[in-house]
Image (tube, rainbow, N blue to C red; front, side):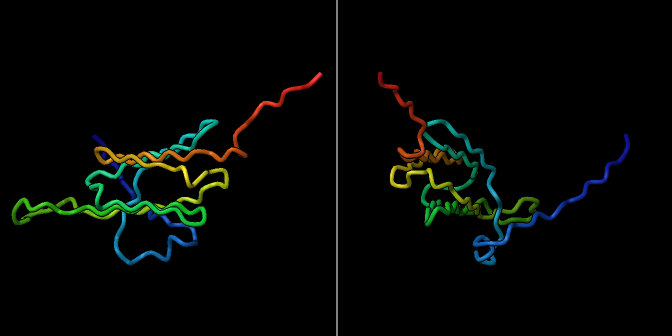
Amino acid sequence: MAERDISVRKETTPAGREEMRAAESFLRPAVDIFETEENLTLVADMPGVDKEHLEINLERGLLTLKGSVERTGRGEGLFREFSLASYYRQFQLPDVVDTEKTSAEFKNGVLTLTMPKSAAAKPRRIEIRH
């Protein structure tokens, strides 16, 4: 079987507020975002995070997700190939989101944010009068 070269590409983050975070090492959680006529729904995978260690902030249209993973005491570590790190991700939300009605659910390491659209952003049908 032929050997394969695997290269690791360093991902750069766009300039902006995300660069102002702490020097701590973070992982970017995998995220899916879905849109319907009524809502935007964000689903983020954050395995190992407890509800108590999850922060969700929405300020001036900037959504910030931050989750900390707590190491459990399983004994003294002799050899480790996997290390725990916190999660951090930011998104600039469109103006159509009604931030007052946004809700969150967190179950089994999966965060689901439901962000309803404002009434002005929802499509509506205009009736024609005779």
